[in-house]
Length: 223
Image 1 (cartoon, rainbow, N blue to C red):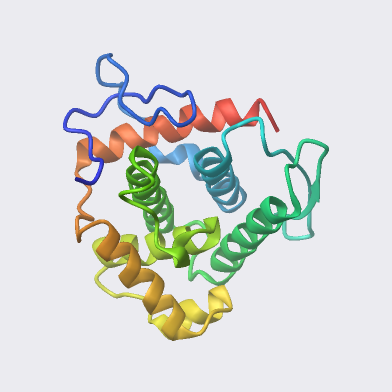
Image 2 (cartoon, rainbow, N blue to C red; image 1 turned 30 degrees about the horizontal axis):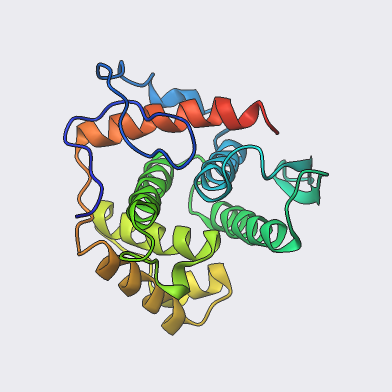
């Protein structure tokens, strides 16, 4: 079965131990205004740090960054702790996707975009947790084996769950620099891998927001 906590609780933050810790439910996340001031750049930061945590752990990847004229941390220089050129390229591709998405979004301060992105990270976490629970029995489809592809697939599913009007695969293709057919293939592969279980309840979403904040602090201390 796909990993979905019956009683949401904070994760044991040791990498590869993606199971709920034995503790009480976290207190509700503060008001969404915590993102209002620096929402565009913080959204990019959240996606990069959480996906880095999910894919590589904390200490294996480290980036030094400089802001461009728009304020986005888009120029990435690999630091000494980077493991390989592949890791660097994967994270650069993911960051490039996020920056492009935010720059072309109708409203760069859209709270709907924030919720869609956070839910997409939750769906990516579900798939990676399922994969890590038994790699031989539940291998990720080859097309989802990079952070950019997995996040893009999760993002299209998250939008489909939350929004009345969905972005076409043609537009997703322009944002991601993929053919529309490839975007559709990523979305379908993720949907099948999760056995069409993409529903996210309010309790699980609140739990995940708490996890994201914990991971942001934890990974931030390593950057």
